[in-house]
Length: 181
Figure 1 (cartoon, helix red, strand yellow):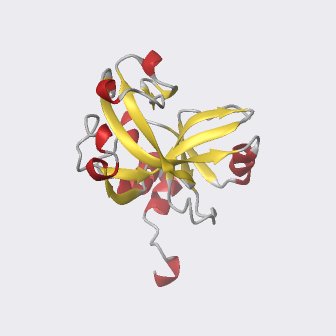
Figure 2 (cartoon, rainbow, N blue to C red):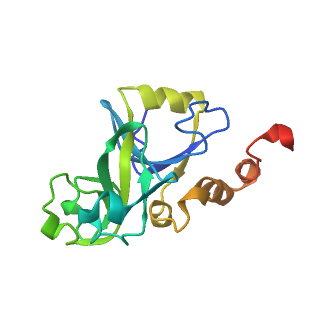
């Protein structure tokens, strides 16, 4: 299967894994050895200024830390819009990618136009994401800048499905528990 780096994985209605129910995942890397992504729409209760004050120069200290996925939730990943994409550890699309670990705290904001802080990430082993895509667990959509830095991350799943239109827009309006409809 071709790489889906730079695409959004939108959780389909059949995806049963509670870690990914109604999520939107930005695929940062997808190769034969596996895939890495960040859940863009799972805000946590933590604020950047409290949880990782050394990253407050990148964002508003009151910004929420997002839960990037179930893998290594004690690790911090920064998704950023880079002035020079060569400065990123990995580029997902355009100038949006992840910061390299170990960036000195005194230069952490240099060359970054905008950033979002994540606890953990989403990961797939070789062929695992390909299998999930073939099963129809995920709906694909090209990522946009506004998706990565959405003002209201919790509403992103519905917003992206609405943007796709047609039956996807109907899915976006589906109640949390369809049996109550």
